[in-house]
Each structure stands twice: as C-alpha cells, then as structure tokens.
Image 1 (cartoon, rainbow, N blue to C red):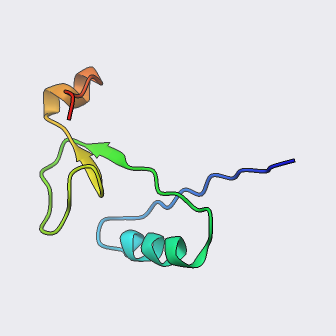
Image 2: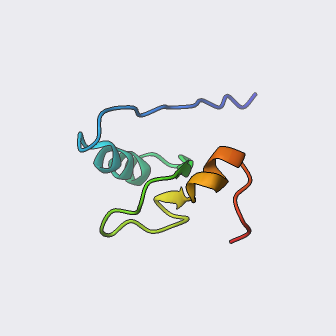
Length: 68
C-alpha cells in the first residue's frame, strides 16, 4: 500500500519557507512542490509558474485564471 502525506510549510513572510522547501526537495526523493496562486506582484527573482502563479486581482477573485 502506498501512503502519501501532505506537508504544509506556513510561516510569516521572510522567515525562510522557500529555503526550507528547497532543502527538503533536494534531500527527499519523490517529494513534490505545489505552486500557490497569489494576487501580489512578483518579488525580484520570483518566476511565474515556478514560485507562484501571479494572477490579477480579478482572476484571483473569480478563481478563473487566464490560460498561460
């Protein structure tokens, strides 16, 4: 039987969530990263579709992002 688990990393902005996730992804085989959606603007070095799905406020509220 295959057992799958969900790990949620939640913390304030700037606390090191991305650093922790990158470390875990390198160390644990068969671990995947789920990309979240946000209506905020990208920060330097963030890539749409890799770090987040950056949506307009209207797309975010409608939950119907345009085709990328």
